[in-house]
Length: 140
Length: 117
Image (cartoon, rainbow over all chains, first blue to last red; front, top):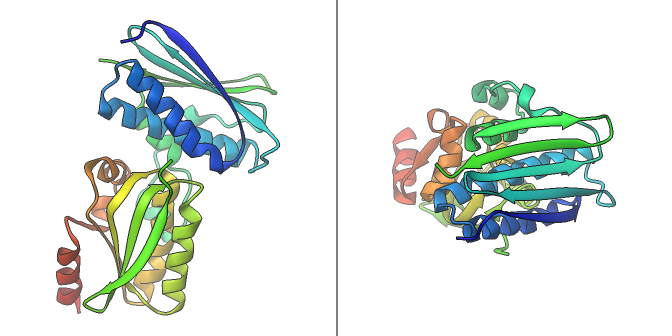
């Protein structure tokens, strides 16, 4: 198992890059000894957070970029997703009522709930220009 | 990268949609087109077979959320089958099992459709 380490990736805001994002986080989490179940959780949570950035922060404008930072340590991994678009606070999101959403034929808004369910900690910072979603997954 | 693919076939007269690869915000529009086409052609009894699907994100689940009412309003249903545990967990987290028929295999979906006739 590798010791503490930090990895960065900068990507353009295109949904085409989501598979790259997933491969990046899964392969690093694997190298750092996370279980298969934990890797699945991390991969989906990061995919959902990046999808929100591409869709909501940048409205699918692929001339814009976002960053992913992974910080592994003994306890777990802290992941930051950083964008410079329209801010959205994922920690102030209500639990979706699936039945209501189906009736209204609404399809969105469940990604944040998934992130909250899959990760151990979720926080959000915005200074008006820069938005940072930070999530943590512990090893135990 | 495992690319996403959709294939269509029939089983006992029911429409079967086979999903392959990874279903995310990039590939969900392909599934949307397929379901839209089936609904436009009044093909309402649909089985979606997940056997070869390795991964799903909420954009994929969103397609089922968006179209289930349309399908049920023309007297049909979308039944979901053959999910691996990783994919099933995502549906389960969002509460799908209480609102959708999620079955172990395609034959169970066929039997259920026959019973509902």
